[in-house]
Length: 567
Picture (spheres, rainbow, N blue to C red):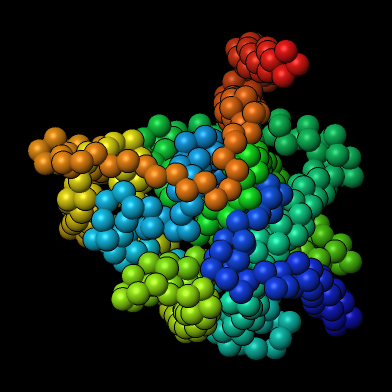
């Protein structure tokens, strides 16, 4: 890239990022002085900001490179993590969110303290804080920085060696993200996420369109024809046992992993807890589910296009997307793309930072005080915690370079320590009334010990896929809690106390839209299967029949909804 192009790219990137920062500052002036304002955006987030923030919190540079790399090197089976997440958003909108908003909870551990006791709250906070502080925040910062360096060759642009360039990238991304999280609280995070989310959607649609034009020699239709006729096995989402995500895992542990992430993970659900009403929260959550349906087209089809254009000769599959972007994207859009990419990276980082600070202030600091703590003190403590956690992550993230071979294994292992017990105790807490805190504590300890043994002692002996292990552990922990509830039930049944700080009227289209969203999940798996795109013989009659049933059922349902609306 010539020096003039580099300068233009950097200048336009700074301009776009500065614009996002100014809009975020303008929209948050004077709104973050109290507890609700800082931690929950004043309980005033609308559907647009909730959906936009959820999109950017969940998607980052590592997904752009990793999912496209998986499609390039294998097939579409890894779309399972994204597409089936739409089902979890349905559960969040219809089951979990009404309870959370009715209880006016700020954090998930606050709900666990209300349902069980302070001991369960402390155990959950320990698991979350260890996971966020030691692994998740540094690894998001590190992997995002690696993605930026791969896409834009930062060492060549800066003239620095690899490690100094990595450190510089980590600090720039981290400082930018920390500014939003520390100074603006959740509202600034949500606003910046939404703006960057629009940019990500533009880029996510543009790259496959340009790729298909290139694949067709300048003809989009010709490129689409080649994509669907050459190497149809690349378009198969029905993963076998040797693929990255076997299809059977969709019906076992992946259900609970997605439920944890979308319904109980503090850094994801915090923006939904700041909804100005249940209806707005449901709109935002369900909209994010439809965004997840788009992910295979934005973040996996480019990988398949790269396979058609370049063949299977890359040294690593993660080189596919950076090469495609560098070849396809015009210079005048490179700065915009870099700004969007950086925005996606520090979105995940600042969301994690904001949530970790929220947990520390409300679930670690406040409960240790003898009396009530005023809002200004809580906000000040959260800001100090944010700075401390950010500085810690700046130090840890570059060190992951020297343990890169084990990075993803470490992330997978540590997440497994707290995702399944969290969703298990929340479900039991919501749907039972006499299971005591003892049951939740035993389940947490059982999971940590058993999962640790499976990962570190019997890892070579156990051949069952780790996602299937999630399902078995979930079932065992539910059984433990119900057994303890039968053995030593609470003398007085727990009753849910509704505080109703926001309007709890359900959005009238929530349930029918949830059904349509679920239909889209099924339709997407039909499309990327041997019944349709993954077949060398073309679309089968079975595909058309099943698709017709889905469409007819949705038309009938929405017709009934419309008649009821006017009756």
